[in-house]
Length: 121
Image (cartoon, rainbow, N blue to C red):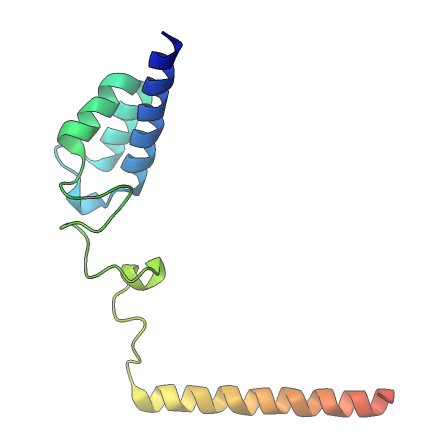
């Protein structure tokens, strides 16, 4: 009998995490907050309802790539949230930025060399 309680608790924890990580656009029948409250306050029934009628179709385990996801999963969430962020928008601006980074790095190296010479290293 104690195994039944552990099973319900495991189902409840899985469902809570699944609701929180699910993509809002794929959730069915209720808004995400509604599902969260239902699973939170009515653990067994809410979890079963979430898994059967609320969960995004093809959502995978905890936000996997399903039809509700935008674009391919790159493995880096920060790029999936804002598509196109990894690609340089303006090649000239990108080259200028890199030139400024190199110039700043050289300036920092020069300052450090002068500091070491002044300290006698």
